[in-house]
Amino acid sequence: MSAHVVVCDGCCCGRVEKGHNEVPINTLKAAWEEHGLADYVKLTISDCLGPCSMHNVSLLKTENGLTWLGKLSENVHYEALVRWARDFAKFGTDAELPEAIASHRFVRLEDVVVRPQEL
Image (cartoon, rainbow, N blue to C red; front, side, top):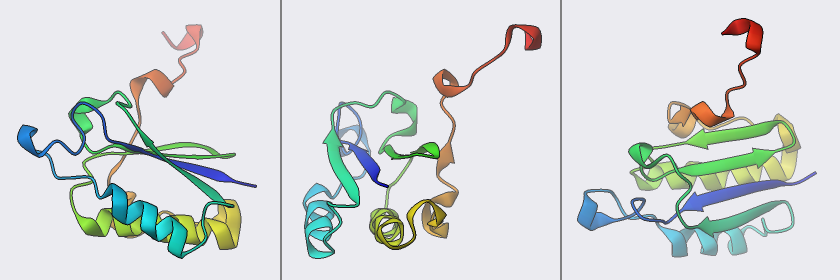
């Protein structure tokens, strides 16, 4: 059982000149190494993930699906990503999203499936 954390560092995310907070990429990479997370949770620093209006976006991928997080603007948010990864390494899919980032969860319209009879 494994998971994947994808952190956007694209056209808007982390761009201080656009008014967004920096994405602490080196800090995240160091935490992954310090806690030996790579065997349980893959960390990918990505180009643009798409929902730019949510700036500083991250995506958590597990066998339970996708969890989109946006407007991650403080170090506490990225510390919570590390905490979630550590919990996932211990508890698998029973790991809960830390409170510091739970309210930053959003659903992308592209991920919503509408059945024809619901139109």
